[in-house]
Image (cartoon, rainbow, N blue to C red):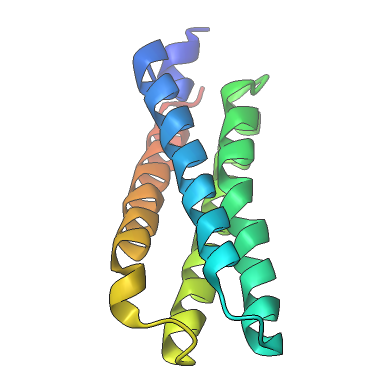
Length: 129
């Protein structure tokens, strides 16, 4: 079986997405470090820290998947973490903890990564044996 049918990424694309998800995690860490020390900000901050830094790790696991089903499962896990991160970012803004304009770029990157992961999962599902 040809791995490229279900992995879809070329080595270059995989490297780029690895770097992109790592950069995303670093941005999430910086966000957490900049949050106020209030109780609610720290509770939400820890949630966004956990989910946002998990995306890259989940993606790396997907790159080492043993089968198309394993790849899909791990990519869906990363997608769940992105969706959860999006939720926590929304709460930070809607609760007034963080000004919306401060999270515009991070929320945009979250949405772009979600689109990439959704597309990858759909392609993998369509191409699995």
